[in-house]
Length: 243
Image (cartoon, rainbow, N blue to C red):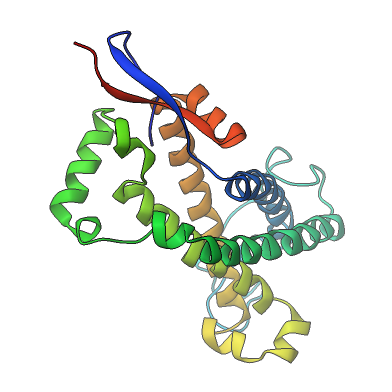
């Protein structure tokens, strides 16, 4: 993450950072994922156990078994499986087609190639270790470097956009009896409907972990500047030290 100038002895400029499509997708995703997560926990409460394989019921061995999530976590707050499903499935359509539109647009305008291309440095253990150390010491990029995704950001976004989000969509489809009839190969890919449900649950919590780290970095690197960049598309960056 990048941050605002932290000293009067540093020259700064306001530059364009995020395009309109990226900003719209970012905020649409934030809303969709909140609704999907809370409604998904509402659905999970109907049977708060997870299994591997095709089948799972009360007397089968569960790899995860817990009490129901409380009202603060779920949508709606009161237990209502039918309403949770309506919220979840309606929002899932918006989320899935939004992701597809964003990926096609990013391929067309070169966003993926320009900003998320993995270079040799991005796979260097030494380089990644240095970036982790710099972030731990709150040493964030400045100047031209602040306008590029660093290696940690690239890997985070690549995993989220190309692994976790598609996994959420396809495991969700694999849990639908109608989609299983149309695309039976979905169950073969995930090893059964209960395995798909488990992967869906795990991927959801990995997205929550990404969100927590993302918000923490924003708070540490300069929340007002970064929030403005995701609303207006422009941010202030340090250019050079003044003599």
